[in-house]
Length: 253
Image (cartoon, rainbow, N blue to C red):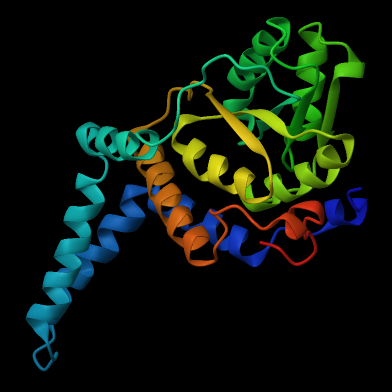
């Protein structure tokens, strides 16, 4: 069972920092002006040491910031994230699991999950995510899905917690195979993380909404950084049997 006290936690410091960085990077003026200042400052101050190093580094950051927003760059980055995700071959499952990612992504995921349920791919739909779980279930009810086929948790703040908290609710019910619904860039990390806690996962990508190039670039950046972080912590490979039976929840980020 999931400890409901986990739902009352304040956002982690990492999530708050991540949100602040995203807000900053999505405002070009707040990025470009400081970088231009760093480029020209060494040449304005007469005794500034390592002028070429400081100016060159700031110039590289400025070029990287703009080039990362080119449609071709984001398309290639997205291709790298989805290339290793297996196709959904239509197998049945024990449950459909929807991962929350905010209001902008919600409607498309609800439609995808409702279609999967109506196609009798699984008898249960489970929504996971703080600020999303309850809202997704409400929208699924509006789509005509009966309450008896819906469950949710609204405590998880990260992809790892999505997996852990979902496992703590569904695995005691005998759920082993799931159809995982999330957007294409997020799918690879989600697939590996849910396998890590013992699920057999069928990935089913949900279309991403129309986003600005800056937002797309941010998504790609976070996903690649997330893969590196989770990989270093060993959270992208299946756990042993003992750990699968007792998913650890408290203290995970």
